[in-house]
Amino acid sequence: MNYFSRLPPDIILTHILSRLDGKSIISLLSVSSEFRHICKNNNEDLWRNICTSRWPSLLTDLSDQIFSISQTISKFPGGHRSFFYDAFSSIHYRNNPPSPPQDTSLCYAVKKDGCVEYLQEKLRLSCVVMEPNRKRAGSLFRTSCKPVVSYTTNKRYVKAKRYIKAVYETVMPGMCKDYYTEMVKFKVKVKCDWEDGEEDRFYVRCIEFRMEDMNGKRLMRDE
Image 1 (cartoon, rainbow, N blue to C red):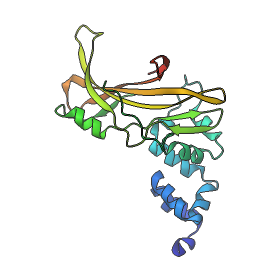
Image 2: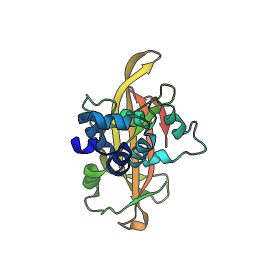
Image 3: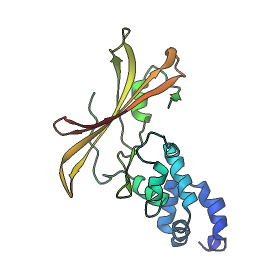
Image 4: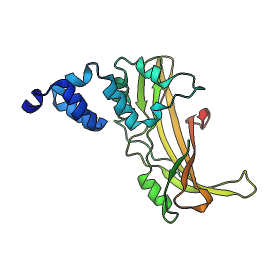
């Protein structure tokens, strides 16, 4: 740390820390008190850039949202730094997530042959939830969480259309007032298909969020 201690803090912020991703900065702060002091004091821009780089959807504030994402994060005790600390690791990082059930346009190039196996190994979902009143956030799934991927058919149309469905699932304790009750199942379905049968035009069509109790009763659903 002798060499870094000779550098002005603004040089470290502008030319060193700004080039690192969130995971690297967390590792750096855990071994260096000087870097930790620099990052914790009045560096909202640094943490905002780190958060929006990892979760680009934070840049989208829709007019029909009940609350503004940016305004909500600004009320966290440490702003974007607190949000990143909360959301970087999953809520239940000490538990092994259960296996999923067997059951804005994003475009990719995915071959049809072997696509199910490919997506099951490569497709990852980062889903962060925020609690505005408590000013906290958390990630629902580990980065290692793999989906169950399968072909399915949309029977609502005259010509039934086949698409790919990827399902992520986790279980967490449900909270009632000030105590925890039964477990709640949180499920995310990602639906994708090829436009005009072209392998280089693979789109994410829909993401469905669903929360159920352990008896299968729907508690919340959104798309």
